[in-house]
Image (cartoon, rainbow, N blue to C red):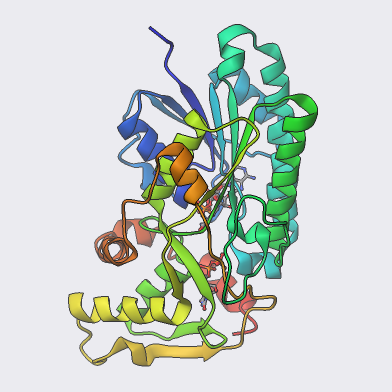
Length: 357
Ligand code: NAD
Ligand code: TYD
């Protein structure tokens, strides 16, 4: 009998990380260590269903803290590292880019340093089984016009401090693979949506504003295009790449569900009008306000993930229509989760920093 897999997940209290942790506990036998510093974006309520599972452990720690990261490796002895911890919001990277350099670039450098030391200390089966998977974004490839799609060979061309910091971290990860033989994998994924996403991102922000009947700030003309993937489909893809991916390879992950921002917002309004009609507002689409565009706003992202689908046998299970309705119903039915982030500090940050709106 082979020993159980031990998966070190960084950023496991965030939106995608918590979905990955829930997936590992539900659909594998792996032991999971969630290593997360609990920034504003974290919410341990997303992991309530895991907290009593004997295979799950949470450790509060910062990926910029080499001693803490090394200790996590030493005590947990992971077979796999799924590195998701990051500053993840483009708008925040425009108002405070330094945190993105520190966490996404320096923090990833520290993860790699600790992973290399640990990997070098292994031998035999433990060594050949070890994998370091870096979870990245399609935003590293920059912006597309109306046609074309990102492929694994698309050159990097990031626009925002967020995407530049993720591009830098991808390069570091690849370099540790080539120079030091660290068994790395990289995934670049399109925009995720689903339960437990912090409501600064488009979909949860629009759901909550529209529910309350307050303005829906759409940047520019709302004609920017994103490809949307349901978060649980992403979590399955990450674990599939970690187990079956070729060493050193890059896997593109997408939902094949391109939509303009305005059409996403309109669909949210229609579903809410149907599910929870507003006493005074007949058609929530009337709440849309076109606001000053985001600086450096990438026009379109689209992913050709056929190679990933063919090689790994993975494909998204959720369509955008079914996934969006599930997501909306989740936000309508999870007030306790929302209460923890409706703090004064988050509101104050929004008011101070969204100067271009
Ligand atoms: P998130 O902002 O919801 O969560 C990030 C998590 O990382 C939080 O729990 C936070 O506490 C933790 N964290 C931040 N800094 C840390 C530090 N210094 N040390 C330890 N923990 C720290 O992010 P998300 O949307 O779940 O994204 C997760 C990963 O997936 C990121 O690397 C992001 O770049 C990537 N990604 C996100 C999307 C998307 O649509 N959200 C798409 C593709 C890739
Ligand atoms: P976002 O969820 O921030 O993800 P990303 O910038 O990583 O793609 O934004 C998705 C799209 O929605 C993006 O084109 C910017 C736009 N957007 C708005 O129009 N209004 C908003 O209030 C937000 C947060 C985003």
